[in-house]
Image (cartoon, rainbow, N blue to C red; front, side, top):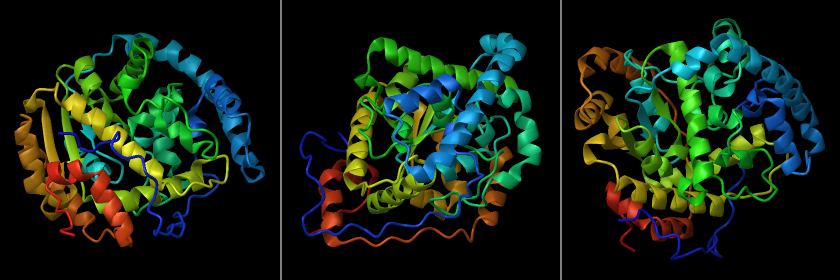
Length: 391
């Protein structure tokens, strides 16, 4: 069953709905690195050229610092290859675990809970933001330069830090591959097509090149951590079929959340991410972009899921994980044949206790938007057990 039917309706926001007031991002100082600061000169120059160098005057300082960092990254990339190239080429990726789910569904919470399992490594912020140099002096930055990171993420109250679990998608992006996140750089320009949210939409050659780059990043992290990996990127959700073929021993954990919360929180996500990451002042209200990405993502997910053995995939819900993280995570481990939960239970309990006062963002929503979400995402409601409004 498809989680949505993108071909059925492409309508925009309802006529009687009003754009939500633009949310304010949490403090994200000018000196905090952005995702683009990890790119090499060639990748950065190509991004600028493809977007006609249309940098807003207020963003020229950001563009200048990215340019300076790109020179350093290009040099470090060569040094890193000289020092670690053979180890990277020979590294073996063993039994990876991929955490899947739409943005704002609880993937970060699940990633941080599972980081309690010391048998695995979770790619962290310095590895994902600086893949061209982290093997050289990433540990030094982790230890001594946390003052450059804000306390909280721009879109919510989850804490930040160089050693915190992070999305591997940023590493793939910095290594020069396409990602839906490229849109954030120049949000007022035409969105990239294809954006690699669904790998079936690209040529066989480009698909393999993208997977090779992900594989390279995973091997680089494996060289440093010397453990199997637990990876988390919402963008991988629609790629489950291709990832299962590339990594036959991989396991997948999909997390769902109340669709109304997902929609409202994702609109806020793109408002805040574009505010702190882009080289333009965004004019988008993001509603249709959220609908479109969700529908493409879950059409690809359902298609790929049908090809993955059931024992390699587990499904959970954010609400169940928050209510009883120990019991729910134990169930997830059991459902995909992961042993050793008893050894990580104390860490899960400690994390849950430490974050029990976490303040979640609150959202308001008009009835017209609720009806639109129900209509376009009905399959997701039904698959994951979320009630539909009777009206």
